[in-house]
Image (cartoon, rainbow, N blue to C red; front, top):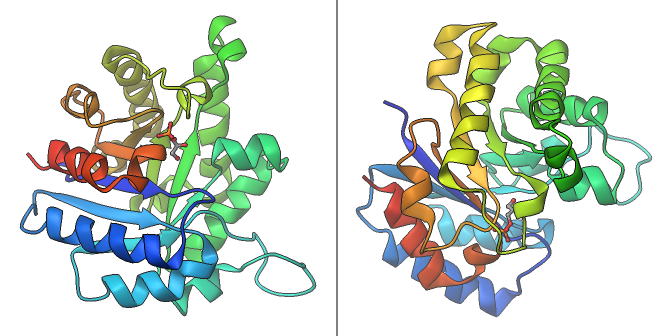
Length: 251
Ligand code: 13P
């Protein structure tokens, strides 16, 4: 059985005081809930704080982006190896906000994915379609292309050390969640696509759902057979909401 993972994506939110209070509550509120695993992906400046706060706890941490380059003249960028200094476990790559606002195409994303793996980070690869693409019946084509680009570059075996996240763009930050069946259909499509290369890896890989997951819809999403947890935006900043979502994964 695949263990569920609930990962918070704080996006560009946080502050020293706020992080401290949020994480202390989340640690206490999920204590002993060991049927699932939990993580927070935080802005770079807080990695030092978050790594000291979480180091002896059951909660992992990571970042939200990395450079595809190892080092050099790339002003404003952060390399995968730098994240090792803060003992990051995860890094999100290919979030739709990076793809649409910062022009990251599938080629760049797959090189970021590779950079993460080469530095012992677990990439959380985000894939998902826009509303226009869904309405034009292109969901599988778009998601398939985003996944294939990575498999082509690193090989399917590399997915053994990765997590996938299906995040329909139209459900992100909109309060409009995919129905459990809509999400399940695409999760199953993604798992089958991986299985067409390697069935063992397809069976093992965690596929998270992201897009307006809240305490009141987490359970119905997490009971679907191919949904292995969630990538949580807004609700990961609210301790009680996030703890409830973690608890929904803990069974
Ligand atoms: P929301 O949960 O705020 O919709 O964000 C989802 C997301 O983008 C997580 O990466």
